[in-house]
Image: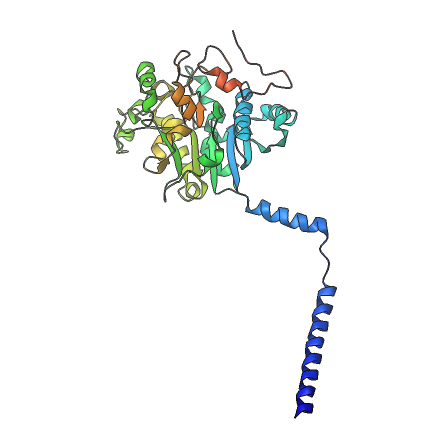
Length: 350
């Protein structure tokens, strides 16, 4: 019995030894992972997990300094993985690339995209009184899915902004189910009500659409409905495509050409009214601090220190731009400006 037990122990030991030999042989034949390959694998996984934040901003000839200042303010105030889509006309693309590559912005991730103004043919009424409002780049925001095809969510910014907060926070703005984008309501700025009243800023649909026209009346939108500002918004590209937003915007552009439903003399621009119509009831709201605007409507009005201190984004919409004089709060903008290495763009100060 003792001999049999001893024999079993020997057989078990041999079985274990055989298994270990087979296991070792298999491992030793596996290709070794070199040190640098291992590091590359780790970096690749980290890069795949890091979310890209696409930011669309235009670079118009004559005001590229605004684009540069806006980009610099975003890049300097976040650790997020931002990808800038810089949209321009053919004559400005070389200039903006040179400005970026020859300054401290050379490390940003960016794509320069040419916008073809021919897509606007037959969709814009000529307006001799406000020709600057008919510039093709004012309508870039209508064509976001064509410019940023691979992204689920996109931030659009006018060039005359400075971002003081972390752009990740704006990107994280919740867009409700079925909504296409998140904008700032024009009734959400109690701190600026004095300026609004003094300057006569429009903040309802009545200020943008001609309610004498039957086509406008048939929309069923109350003229006292609060408007929104399309200079800063976060868009859900999936909803945008599924709801055919670009086609709907183009439809209202064509209708305006035929019926003069809105004009720059009414709402101060012709790119806002189509958005007010198409996005009505289909947008969420950006936190007020993420769009402190109207800084360019008066050269004298100053925001209170409390408003400036809490602001995440400042917007100089209006005639008085911070790269010109006179202008309010221009020092807040100038902090982020990077001089043009070509010398073509210069700040104009008296």
